[in-house]
Every structure is written in C-alpha cells, then in structure tokens.
Figure 1: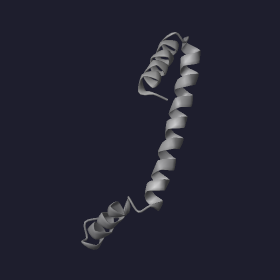
Figure 2: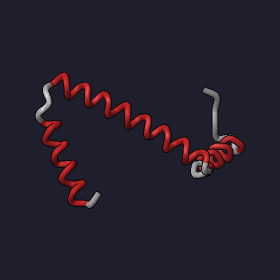
Figure 3: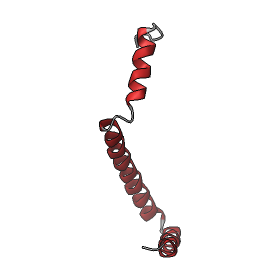
Figure 4: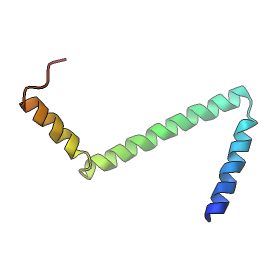
Amino acid sequence: MATASIENEIEFLENRILKLDHDSFSKLRDWFIELDNVRWDKQLEVDSNSGKLDFLINAALAEHKAGKTRDL
C-alpha cells in the first residue's frame, strides 16, 4: 500500500473514531489497549528469545554480585 493511501486510510479511521458515541468509543479503546498489550508481549518475547535483552540481565546480575541489591 502506498504511503499516501495509508495516510488516507488513517485519516478516514480518525474521522470515523471522532464520530463514535461514548459506549462505542469505550469498546474500541478497550480493544485497542488489549491489542497493544498483546503486540507488546509478543515483541518482548521475540526480543528476549533473540538475546536483545541480555544486557539487562547481565547488568542486574552484576549489580547483585556487587552487593547493590536488597531483598524485597
């Protein structure tokens, strides 16, 4: 899909969303938040499995070994 076509589609959706009543908007918002959470979780899993987050684990382990952590 060409960029202009995508922008037109987004503008169309924005205009439709602005016309929703309160209940419909709430349902759409809840659905969108859930979709965003699912996509975030999937990306986090992909990044974790590929090793992109290993630096965080290594930093946390280094701080723990250096005595910079405490029990919760």
